[in-house]
Amino acid sequence: MINQVYRLIAPKQIRTDFVDLSMNGDNVIVRPTYLSICAADQRYFMGTRDRKVLSQKLPMALIHEAVGKVVYDPKGEYPLGTKVVMIPNTPTTSDEIIKDNYLASTKFRASSMDGFMQNLVSMDRNLIIPFDFSERSAVLLEITSVVMNAMDAFSKHANPNKQTVGVWGNGNLGYITSLVLKTLYPECKVYVFGVHEAKMNYFSFVDETYLISDIPEDLKIDHAFECVGGSASENAINQIIDYINPQGMISLLGVSENPVPINTRMVLEKGLILQGNSRSNYNDFQKAIDLINANPELTDYLSTIISEEIEVRSIDDMILAFENDVTNEFKTIMKWCI
Image 1 (cartoon, helix red, strand yellow):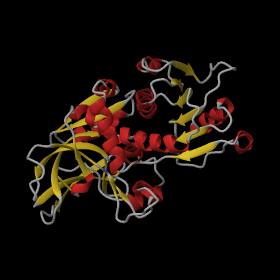
Image 2 (cartoon, rainbow, N blue to C red; image 1 turned 90 degrees about the vertical axis):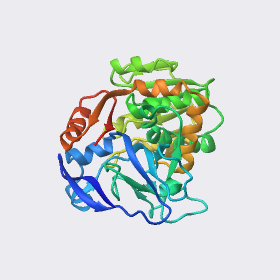
Image 3 (cartoon, rainbow, N blue to C red; image 1 turned 60 degrees about the vertical axis):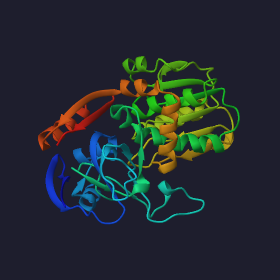
Image 4 (cartoon, rainbow, N blue to C red; image 1 turned 135 degrees about the horizontal axis):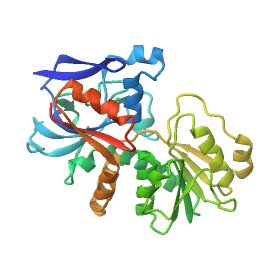
């Protein structure tokens, strides 16, 4: 069966490639319905990744945040039209200790293999999970699963003092991290720290919000989540180190292209834990779905950070979505009608 894959061949240039879609084996064929643009996708699209990296990766279909509907299941386990989230993390080996998303052998959509910008996607049945709520909100399941991965590490490694937790960053990741924190730890006081005052209005469910230039000197937190990334993560991490209590845990979620200098002297003096968190696996996705099923109001909160929905019927629409995303406050999603 011939499939259409929409691959980035150079910055801001997308090409339609016709490829064979194998119908053999146990794979489930899914038609994407909603796709969400991530900062990682933007770095490829805008060409801000290192030239050597771009030459190695391209041509490649972008997008690793997507949901769709089943159009063919050789085993008949999934009825036609079943709504499923597609898991971008694609393990090739397993380990008894190390999670799939941290194994060097694992492939990832829109990074080491084609992403979800395709007419149809052949998915391992172990990499799709059905859901019943709105597809428009469900397209944010991938980023929510990344937060669930971080929460798993937080529950295992952070000390029991969880009276106050700080979240640095008031973008998409900071919003969902704060939302999940307040849901899982309702008695905990969650403080959000950011640089965009207007965005703080979206965080109505947290206990306090602070601009990073106006933090009370006597404020202390037990643990923190860094959701900034990029060059700004240096200031964020070092500010966290200043305000965190001894033996607290700093969960790092922001992605930085270049090394980030941090105040290791105070990390040692305070006995802090720095926990790296990246991507997610099947269990994290399932936990994200279970969390939303148990708290249906979360779909409304998630939809709040969808800044723009663009109906995609052509490559021009795809390019428009990526270009508009640069100036949108939060998420840009594509309703995949191509």
